[in-house]
Structure formats: structure tokens, C-alpha cells
Amino acid sequence: AQKVTQAQTEISVVEKEDVTLDCVYETRDTTYYLFWYKQPPSGELVFLIRRNSFDEQNEISGRYSWNFQKSTSSFNFTITASQVVDSAVYFCALLTDSWGKFQFGAGTQVVVTP
Amino acid sequence: NAGVTQTPKFQVLKTGQSMTLQCAQDMNHEYMSWYRQDPGMGLRLIHYSVGAGITDQGEVPNGYNVSRSTTEDFPLRLLSAAPSQTSVYFCASREIQTWPSGYYGYTFGSGTRLTVV
Image (cartoon, rainbow over all chains, first blue to last red; front, side):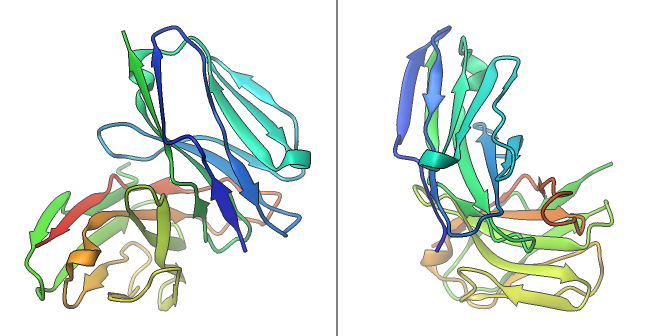
């Protein structure tokens, strides 16, 4: 069975602080994709990043960075120098087949105050 | 290029009423799916379709019907609404992508917020 755990329900920070969101996944499949999505207050789902199971290279994109570690089944996401516009719910998701049966985590609410 | 369009954005139903949530995409995507989002539970797959005339159940299909008569449209029907169906519904689509090496994910609609009273 597939499972995604986002243990942090809500994180509150002051602007310019760094924020790290944790994601732990479970799967027996050796081939899979991991995603991060952002859901701002307006409600739409915004794609941030995907990683496949055979590429553990971590990446930095602007203020965002990702840390994918297969050994610990974790796919953590960091926002550096947070801004008020980063306030949103962030979802980690696991995909193990081509038919689109995502397994989403419960989401982490990020609140950035000025 | 509209992407994935969902209508309506908001809807209030009385228990027992029926309605159809509309989803349309203009990207010629073969694959379409419906999810519901509930607090603390992320998104859960209701039904999906891999092409016109082909549908299948997801994780939480009870109380919902779908059909796919065209590539562009994938409506979700609630035949007899129940308060447990109060949720935000998302439609998503993608091309048939090569698994796993050519896979690059989904386009989501902006959601329909449904309240059943």
C-alpha cells in the first residue's frame, strides 16, 4: 500500500525565515514519482516539482530547494527567505503507476507573517 | 489556452438533489480524473478515464458516476447528494505519458466547492 505522511499540520514563520516541510512516503514499488503542490488561499493547485525514484539529485530553484533521500523515504521541501506570498497549503504526493492514482499527504499549512 | 476548466466554482445542494460537475480540457489529453479534497486528508481519487468511452473507479467512487463521451469532457454526477459529499472537487488531466521515463504530471482545474445541506 502507498502512503504519504506530512506530520506538520501548520508552520508559522516570520517573513525571511526559512521553512522546511517534511514528507515521508511508503511504497513497495521501485519506480515512482514524488510531487510537491502548492495550494494558495484562492484554491487552485500549483505544481512545484516532481522527482522520480531513479534520480536522487537534489535541486535548488530560486528560493525553493528539495531533498530527496530514498534511504529514509523522505522528500523534504525548503523555502528560503520566506515571503507572505508563500502562505499556502503544501501537498506532497506519490505516484506509483501511469494511471494517476496519486497518494496525497494531508498537507501542511504555511503561514508567513510580515 | 484555457487548460482545465471546472464549472461551477461554488454550489450548494440540498440532501437528495442531483447535479453534475463539469470538467473540460482543451489540451487533447487522453487521461482525465476527479479528486475530492477534504480537510486533513489531502486529495483522494474518485474516478478516472484513460480515453473516450473508458472509465474506472478510484479510491472513493461510491455516490458518484462518470462517463466520457468525448476527449474534452469528463463530467462527475452526484445522483442523490449527501452531506458526506461536501468537499472541494478537482478535475485533472494529462497526456498519455511514457511511464516512467517520460512522465511529467498533471494539469489541475481550479476546483468546485460543493456544500450539501
